[in-house]
Amino acid sequence: MSTAKAAKARARERGFTFVEIAISLVIVSLMALVVERTLASTREAEQMLDAVRRSTERGQNLAYEIREAVSASRKLFGNDVNGNAYLDALDLTRDPLDPNARLPTFDEVNGLGPDLSMDPRTGNMLLFVREADAAPAVADPATGKIRHIDTYRFICIYPRVTSRFVVQVEPREVAKDLVVWRSVAYPSQSQILAVSNATERANVVKDLYDRFGYDMAWDPNGAVADAFYAMDTLGNIAATPVADPTIDEDQNLSDRGRLVYANVQLGPTDGGVYHKRKIFTVDAWDPDGFEVKIVGASGSRKVWMHLVVEVQASAGRVTQHTSTVIASTKDL
Image 1 (cartoon, one colour):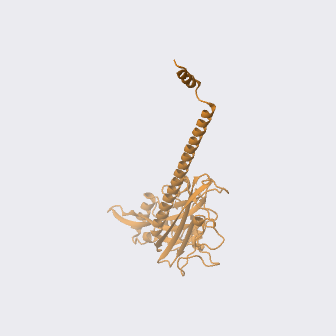
Image 2 (cartoon, helix red, strand yellow):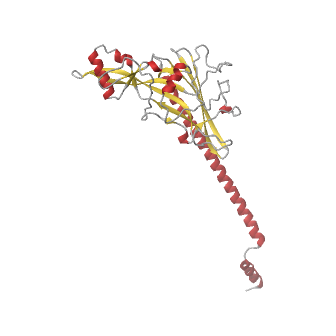
Image 3 (cartoon, helix red, strand yellow):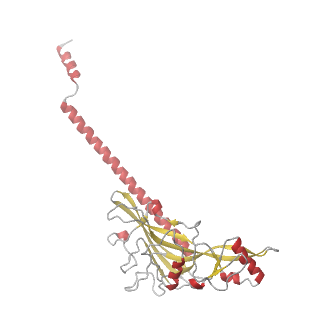
């Protein structure tokens, strides 16, 4: 073997120099850093897109669902003696009402717009009555004669303070959920009394009680202390109202909280964040993600609703989605 070939062979046997190894390590480290940052950026982008998708879907779907329910309402309650008395009668034991919640006050003079100074009318909850399926009660078992009695459910949509922290930003605040509460159904007292034949009326009451489980009838024209009349299995309907009624929840139909279980929350009011600012409220009170105003006379009301939901996207990053809908309705 020649001297030159021997030298090359010995050079190959020596391996890499320290400088070559250091350069290789630097190149590999830089490549790893680029890959890591690329993956981290991709992960953050995916988290943001997922947060935007969830807030948009949840906010829009819930806003449209509420608008549909309100549009079909037959009686709205406002922030007055009668409305608050009905609100107090609801059994909200499972999902207690946020102490900051208030019903909107009807404005039958002005159009939709911000409240006037010193006249707060905007609220952050809704209480209304919606028709349920009519009950086909048997009036005459011998002939099979049926009397269809209209039934009604109370629906309350309100904020609730939970024990969870959905958004992890400072200052940390427990999440507020939006609850959709539904009562058991109540048959129409006036339609029961409209059954002129006493025997048939007793049969209707007995069937409503035994087969459908209705133990009270409702008069929509009365205050809460004058509106509910007890019924029994003997076919009797009380002549005097129940003095202190409780409007029970239908636990099979109530949707309960619609946001927090999906890691979404009502957006707390923040004047420094455009999407979380108050729209129609002018007093010091904060609607915290659900703002409601009702205008117009009882025969033609407009119900304006502004919903703000937010989702944690990544550490220190939160996304909000706002939905504004208007429903038209009229009372019984």
